[in-house]
Image (cartoon, rainbow, N blue to C red):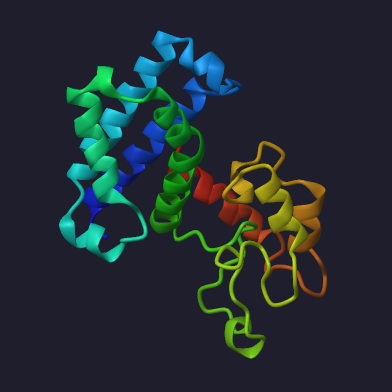
Length: 200
């Protein structure tokens, strides 16, 4: 990933956070009753689409799990046909689909592979214990459901660094366990904090 693409991706993440703030604690009916909120979300989606158009084709080709074409296409519709938009579709996209896009971009930019900050890269358990990795298995690696991952997912966080309670007792217990914890203790906690800093 070149620096230009990375810079654009970080800007996209920040724009998705703007939308999250706009619709925070809103339900669909409240959103649809507010012209101000609808226009603000649409303008931000236009910004995101414009940013996507500036990502290199090589990068987009290598990360086809993200619907780049659809995001850019929505920008054109929102910019040139605002009054033809179905605002219920905008709500569904902003509420359900955009957060998934944001998380996938965060995973790419920050090389995020677990909820707790323990790095999968180079971990011998992937082969020796047939571990499917944390995020790829939705929090069910080789030993079954992970309580840290489950907690994180229940709070709709990508990783523990997004949680205001970090480091909580549960994460500290895993990170600082004398037998199975980190070396040095607390390493995964610091990793989560570093991931969080990328998108400040």
